[in-house]
Length: 284
Image (cartoon, rainbow, N blue to C red; front, top):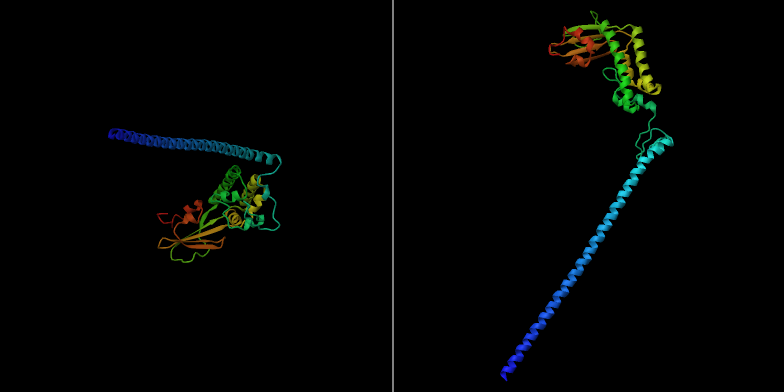
């Protein structure tokens, strides 16, 4: 009897273990199936996202292509219509000057330009790039006109060099007189200098037009330069060298003088410097 009980007990225990094993296996399989389902869902989401991204990229590429085509088409259409892309700002305002935050331009009356303290003429007589840009002069135009202007100025300075001479009379007071003085007179024939001045201004108008030439030549800076470079009256320059090596310079025709100068070449044209060699510092 005991043996029968033991056998049934053993069989019952085995059955329980088997059932537990089956349940555990089913649970694991169920978990695996859920994981596989989640993985499939995730894969589908990834595919969908990639597809959406590709669609978005193609759309962006299409938009960029359309924008480029429109940008290329606009200038040609504007040109055929006789208008420019910036013509929205081409109509003058009701009152000048005008400041418009959105506009790429500043509206000013042309007559303001000659009053501005701009450097208009360079050392050799050339129109500066600064004023050329303001007047809308192209690089090619600037090169052509400057070549002519530099030649005319060189011709005038050659005449001035030939006429320059050391004289005994005093020029404008140079201030202190505790040093050695040299005075030089420069007298270009009046007719010759007037012709050169006319040629200079005509060269400008021939290249950039009378309107822009007028604005340029009416400026204070240009007027001062023209009167100095093509002055009809003789210029008398006096230079004093002091014991400490500095100079005082006086210009009689200009009515101006400068003191405490260390380099004459900063104030005098190159062609006249040799006439002051007797009093120039050896290091100059």
